Image (cartoon, rainbow, N blue to C red; front, side):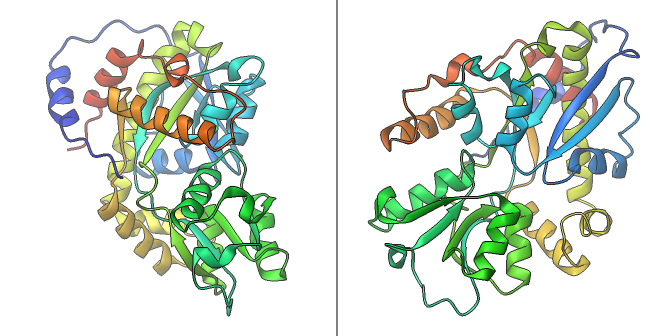
Amino acid sequence: MRIRSFGWVFTLLALAAQSAIAAPDLSKTTLSVASTGWKVEQAVLKLAKLDDTPYRVTYQAFQGGALGLEAMAANKVDFAVTSEIPPVFASLAANKGNFKIIAIKNSSTLHQELIVPPNSPIKSVAELKGKRVGYIKSTTAHYFLYQMLKNAGLKWDDIQRVEITTADGVTALFSGGIDAFASYGNSIKAAELRGATQLASAENILSGNFPIAASEISLQDPGKRAAFADYIGRLNAAYHYAETHPEAWAKVSADPTGRPYDVALADIKAEYVQGPSHYLVVSPEALKSQQDVADTLYATGLLEKPADVATFYDSTLDVPINQALAKYLPR
């Protein structure tokens, strides 16, 4: 079920009246950002003319949030936006993933789908029994595929599971290597442009919460802590600008996401209606949603041991993040 929050606007307006706390000199600070799919954060900040940060920002693109967190575990990135699933798996690593969730991006759950190739005889999830189904491990696709199977009366072991990447999954779907593909974002859009069809949507399975991870090492740096808060405030305003200027955002995002302009424009408008993007500090509701995911993953045998999600959430930046959200509050 989608999570909605409207009280944040009033909180931000109140915080805007507070006096700013002196921030450290950020001119020597660099944030390394892990982007998913393409360097979307860089593009949206530039479009909204909010890329003039007092600190340097570098970007690396990864195929999914799980890979971004792997880079964070190796201390190669400072900041990553992921879904609720990768942090659960990452938290059970030897070094507990070297991350903390410091905020939440809540946005659309469209384009998270289970798809089949053109002219597939498979017309329902129940018909996947014994079939080869590709999915991206430790991601939303991993989670929602399990839930879709459960809803159709199937067990995890009733299908031939194929762990695959987003790009290879599309190739395998059209070459006959797999019978269905659970994926998200650009891979779904690219496959559907080639004639793939939706078998099931995760629109009402996923919460729309995308946790924002910061590396534990980076959180020990006062400059990066200040930059994290400012950067989140800028992103919140930038996404609001992009989604309320869909024509301009479609021109920027069409090519990097492999979509014609008209398809990109339609997607942006639909996503805004279904779940406009906004950033929030950590809340009890977000923790509950994340814990529900972790408990489901453990109950189904996808986790080796239970995960207490509270151990990888950090609310120590709530005040500066809320101040930054208020400072850049969309008007």
